[in-house]
Length: 99
Image 1 (cartoon, rainbow, N blue to C red):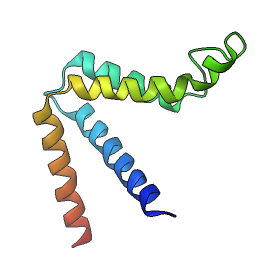
Image 2: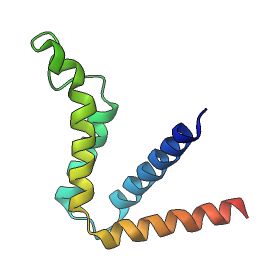
Image 3: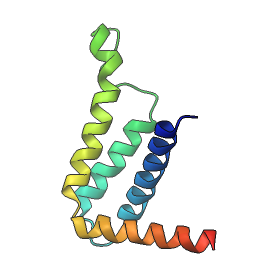
Image 4: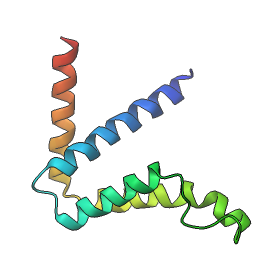
């Protein structure tokens, strides 16, 4: 596996863990939590929002466009302090696990 791919996988794993902690954090507002749950559900769902039968090209490329857009919107709505606290918590947990 290339270094770039390993780095991307590590980053994705970190962001997923941050999303999990943000969902548990009481400082996250209810609408942000709902949007994050919907984003995760769409990412894991086998169903498409845009049917490929009706819009051939658009139906195939909607997921690579919609999923990152949803996550970027959610991350912009979450207070930066919450994200940083979650990131620090993950780093501390990783340091303890590897000690």
